[in-house]
Image (cartoon, rainbow over all chains, first blue to last red):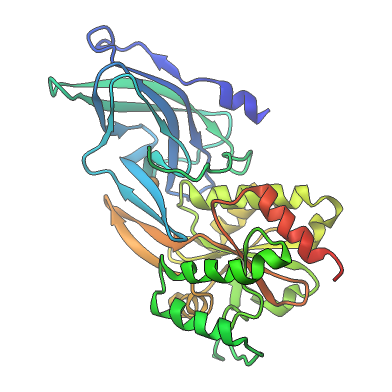
Length: 159
Length: 214
Ligand SMILES: [Cu+2]
């Protein structure tokens, strides 16, 4: 049943700027559920780019702060860092934001995120050439905490 | 307060040397030495994780559970113990590790009851007992969460060669931390360090080996 949730692709809402900037497609988005009082969690997704773009920011009504993060193992130590310059996505490439790699970090959460709910997320991209920014809105389903494996990490965090 | 640990167990010369190296580089590099050790002993025993049998660290803990009771390793004698250090606000590695632990428990079948998963928070300021209670319940009601004040946490992490550090991000902070799962056998002896990159199958394989009569 969790698989069903997983295969529910993120509903990418058509935004006003969509036709002007059709450079990215977001799919397979999901947010990890939380317990009460928990203030942070991650959103994961695939982002396909038709042009060189950079994911530079995020926003969500459920979070006070949204950052673009990288998780990496150094030795056996887990380190998580904000990608200060954003996440570059090359033309024709698909960035996988998944456990063990990149995620959109939702912090200062205003509510508990329960399995089956959906979380609106707005992503801001910068066109690498024109430097113009544009946004994508998506509804990311919440996957219940502990509900399923996030998959064994294939070991690689970088492409 | 008694010290967290009092211990004198037989040590192997190799492990004592290893301990020195690991202590000197308490952080990312420390397990490189263990990997060498795994080559020497782990493969012989057939473990997929790092065999640290006879290690001169990680012998005991004294921490508080979500009901306020003091717990030590001896409380779990007779069970395999899988001990993991992490924090609730972790978006990725900790929930992945605990989800895997729950899966491993299922994979062990009837022997799943012989596995006790213990989560030690490296973020006791934010991880309240109530939050930890609900967090564990989300993965498996049998999982135990333990916490200690800053001093107790530091002593425990030192005993287990576990690195943890607050790192500011935005208006908040996150925690860098060692993401190994330590495994004790049913006699309460530290036996294995399992890596985060390993699969549930790898974990279940090694735990089943430990349950097999010698
Ligand atoms: Cu993060």
